[in-house]
Image (cartoon, rainbow, N blue to C red):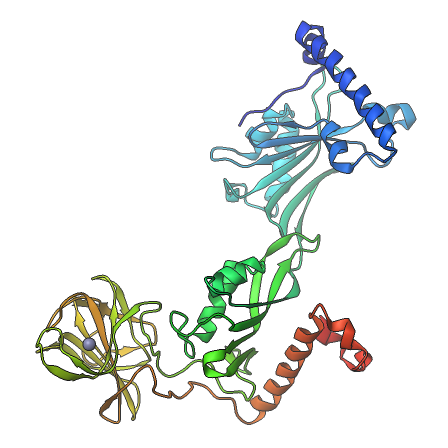
Length: 473
Ligand SMILES: [Zn+2]
């Protein structure tokens, strides 16, 4: 930590130096020019320029500012001399409350008193370097024999959590201050342009990256973003932004609604976030059909298809043979996730396929994975696996010309085209869940409409008073 220490003696010495007097002279000229210019233009001083004239002493991690107390402590004249200095300190490795306060010349007794008070609700060893900030307010020393007096100390753990210790007549009092997280809904939308990806268009709209990732994840069972998106396709999204009580931005929250219109399929996918009565969150279409499917069509997200399902000349055998799966090119060692939950019914070597795993998902569907370089050690014949669990790694074992995953979906014992097969949804809502979902969905639709910048144009068409005020929150 480096800090500039300001004492009356230092200031007197500094003023006496010639370079300061040169500075003072040029500063006065600047000030004069400034007033002439501002008078000529006849306008008020813009606040940003005003800021530049405020004295701020800043070192690498300490910001000091001078605060005039709201109520004069010692009468009119006294208040001029009873200003409080505020220091904002970023905690670095090796810092402690004691080291920070003693560098500000606070007395040993005050350091002890404030530390004792803080310890009643906060463990001082829980100070986190490079995360926590400390704000110290100090009454400057009144004579050269006295010490500065600590008036308050705040440990800022996060934008919504701080510990505040204040000096009172009876000593220091420490309290915790927790802000609630306030949610604001944000609407985003865009049209895919030629040469721009969905990500690029979304970023231009100011949508945060983690919200875009979530958007991809929600649609990953229905849409192959590598191949299905074309210029002219449209997306819409509504997501949460989180703020503390004093309006500080904390980050993005959940994606509440997402829609994707694909010209190639002439269809719009609309998905709504819904938490069921058991507390499980999922995304559902307008009719309460779950977005998650029993199987993923492309187990390795974003991998390039190197060979499709159907007849082709076999690259190793040289003659035409039906290709009963889809090949995804990926580097050797790329992890292979299970396309769906199920039981491993075969793990071993099969001629042609090389290292091969077959998973049975239910009475109808199985999937198979071939040419693996190796298996994941805890996945064996008989192992129950979850969707997305890593089962092995891409390789080029068996009849293969280069590293790739050969992936098959087997329906009732027969290989089908993974890219075109219609797969059942994992969870469809039914019974009273449907009724609850329907009201959530309607509320989301209204919230989304209200966030439209053109909303006021058609707001008169609906009775806004009839909308439950909760809906607009
Ligand atoms: Zn293949």
